[in-house]
Image (tube, rainbow, N blue to C red; front, side):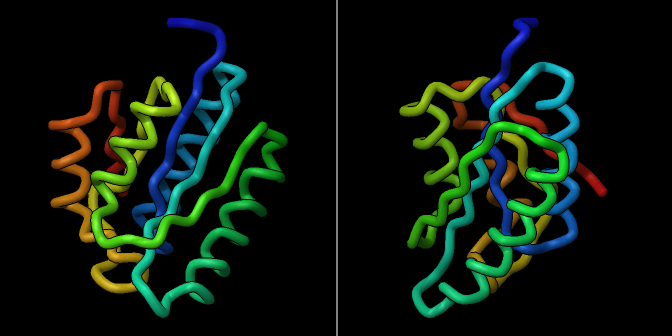
Length: 128
């Protein structure tokens, strides 16, 4: 395994996505990694999305890890993660095994399955 890792994390504000973020942080610490946090949200959910990203920012800053936060307006979180990982050359995608069905449209379970089956990089599904 290489000594630097680019990690993409999909979050939605659920406990499962927080666990995924914490696992990504631990992995980034081990491999001098960079983390990009992505939240896919539905129209009208911008304020909730902002709060979720602020919490993610706080957790990552405490760990002193190089990072980037991104929110994407859309309805297909799996496709957004897969495309981001492919176009930005990520080594690993981290997602929770399940998530919220409304806040950020992360219908995990189905999202995690799609990411695992279609991603062109490794995928870590974190179970709580």
